[in-house]
Image (cartoon, rainbow, N blue to C red; front, side, top):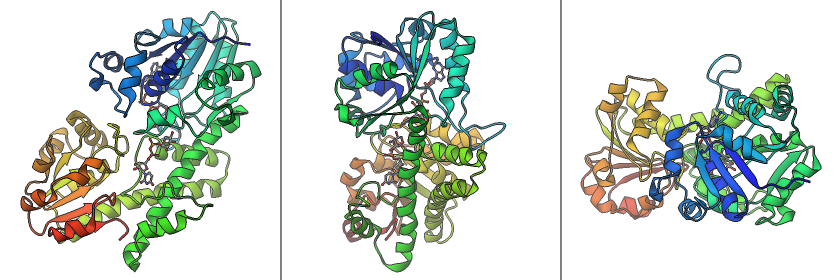
Length: 460
Ligand code: NAD
Ligand code: UDX
């Protein structure tokens, strides 16, 4: 059996940071070191000012405050942390490949392979290596091959332990998960990881499987979740044509216990770093086994999501008398969902870019996303020059300024504070007619209409 005294986590991102902070918090006798090659990120994790942590998550600051410096450490010294650890989590990014074979579809595994090679090179004692990143099914076989062929003759045991936390609720998801999934071959290695989670998770919720089931379950879970959003979004368009209300439909079907009420909120489209990437990866894997019907089936979830973002933007243009050229449009919310500062694949990016192609002037307000991030997201698309992006899009620290003199407001993230704004004051300072396009069905139609807004919401 294995005794785990020291843990190393490679990757101090949205998953590695919160996940391993919670492990350290719950296991004061285990030393947890989170390492990253990004020294700015590590410096931010070490910032004494807890409001400056690189990841915003409700409750994370308290967890970090309690554990940091006690048994939780953030460092750029990757090799040292690997050498000292009994158990190593790999939690690096696995983005969609943007070059070569599988470009735009497959997961880019170069960061994973670098980790494996570094572990093999540095390790002089037996290690349990845990896949925390989301990986294509059968990646553990590749990892094992690299570790065994380039290592120093020590034993490596590979486990798959995918992470199911959602951003914005990461801390509560980690503290009371629906389940913890651990895939592996070696019973002792599996037991070592089970024993860590069992400190705070009911053993009945700790599921152990073979490696491949575990790896594939993560991609499958995200595909099913995203599919629910695309399914309700598909119905939202039909609602707009027929007089049905998508929230009423969602409630009616969700009360069927076989369907369930969660994850049926129609929206401007799902964002986030996971859903699109993981479905594209699933589609790619299915095609690589020549399972074209399987691939086409899941591909449709992405196609529907693209359509939802596009038609939301198109509706704005059409409603504003078929031109938004030179018109100010306020975008409330840049994060891909509330309670996070993460903007990866956020619908706001695509809706704004689309409107900017029509020469709209965009004014953005988001309570947690920094200005540089917003410009970086736009610049990354390469649609227009860096200067043009700054000329056509302004970022405001005050929502009332963002909405001033706007022809329309687009609500693209469901931040709670948007509900509590002084909408009368916003109305007074807008152009007339004053349009609100609610991509989150967040506001109260009756209230807005009584203030004189022309209110459009998804699926109504
Ligand atoms: P992220 O980009 O926020 O963090 C990854 C970090 O790894 C970066 O800081 C990067 O600098 C670092 N890194 C990359 N290569 C490295 C190396 N060789 N050595 C040291 N550090 C290295 O990514 P994330 O959102 O934390 O996602 C990580 C993984 O977890 C992905 O596979 C993702 O699919 C999966 N996942 C993400 C979520 C989520 O909600 N974000 C949820 C579940 C699973
Ligand atoms: C997702 C999975 O939920 C999580 O289990 C996995 O570990 C990582 O990927 P995340 O992307 O952080 O988590 O957030 P999630 O709450 O799933 O939302 C994803 C996107 O779908 C957001 O843009 C959200 O606004 C949207 N969404 C979600 C809807 O539009 N409607 C819904 O009913 C639910």
